[in-house]
Image (cartoon, rainbow, N blue to C red; front, top):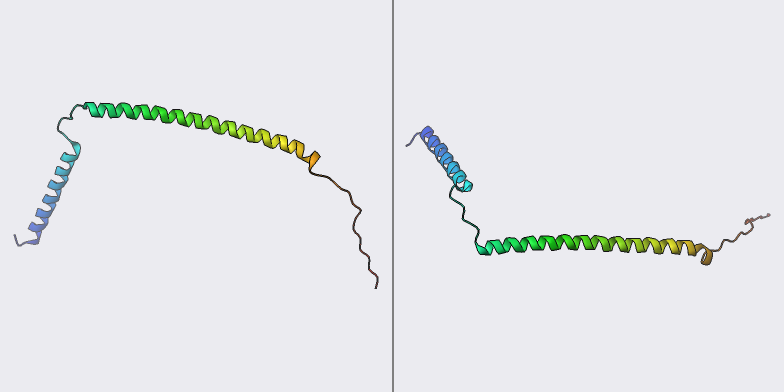
Length: 101
């Protein structure tokens, strides 16, 4: 096989065979095994963890909302009390500087 076209055909054919073999292995045409007891217990544990995670997210959201409500109430009460106790408005006469030469 010294001709270049023969080599190109052989290369193309080998690439096609490789791609078909890859597709056949990736498709897994053989029968799938039934899930064993270890896989079933693992799936049950995963479902339990997902439920617990959802509950934790719900509780965290409730606590965050409660903390936010407390902060809003605290800032509202401090804002209402702050002007009467800590801020004092003073009216001074205007500052005028007159210079004579």
